[in-house]
Length: 281
Image (tube, rainbow, N blue to C red):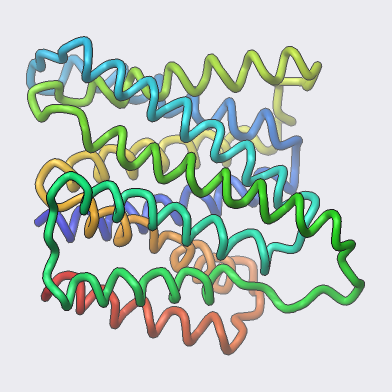
C-alpha cells in the first residue's frame, strides 16, 4: 500500500508541476508559487474538521515547518537555476540530489531495503535524469552561468530531499497537522522574500484557475506522500514519489503536443522497470 500511495503522489506531483508550468507561461513565477501553495493550505484547513482528530506534538509541527521551508527554498532555487542554465543540466542534478538525501537518511536511520529495491532506486535516478533532460540548446551556454546553475541545482535537490526527510520524521498520531505547518511556513517565507524583492504577488486573472488547480493537486500529492512514508521505508518511498517528471512530460506531450524525445521514452521505460524492482524488492 505504501508503494501505491507513493506512486500516486508522484502522479499528482507531476500534474501539479504541469499546471504550474502552464500558469508560469501566463504570469510571473512568484504569484504562481505563492498562490498555489496558499490554495493548498486553504483546501487542507477546510478539510481538517472532516478528518479524524489528531494530537500533534510540538516536534511534529516543528518538523513540518522545517520541511515546508526547505521545500520552499528548493522550489525557489530550482526556478532560478532553470532561468540561468540549461534544463538538461539542472533537472537531472536536482532530481538525483532529491533522491540521494532521503535514501542516505533512511540507510543512516537503520533502513535496509532489499537488493532489488536498491537497484530500483538507482534505476529510478537514471530514469528521472533521462525524463527531465532536454536537447542541447541551439545557442551556446556560458560556462559561468552553467556553473552557477549546477550549484543552485545541487542546493535545490538537497532542499527538496530535506523536505522528504522532514515529513518522514513526524508521527502518525499528528495526522495532517505537519502538512499545515509545512505549507504555512513555506507561504510565509516565500511571501516575505517576494515582498523584500519587490515582486508582485497578484497573478494575471487568466492564470488564476490553473494556479488554484495546481495548488490543490500539489497538496493532494503531499498528503499521499505523507501517508506513504508513514507506512513504508523512506529510502524506497521517496524515490517512487520522485518519479513525478514522468507525469509532467506525458501531460506536456498529450495536452500541449510537445515532442517526446527518444531519451525521454527510454527514461519512461526505465521508470517502469524501477517501479517493478522497488515494489517487488
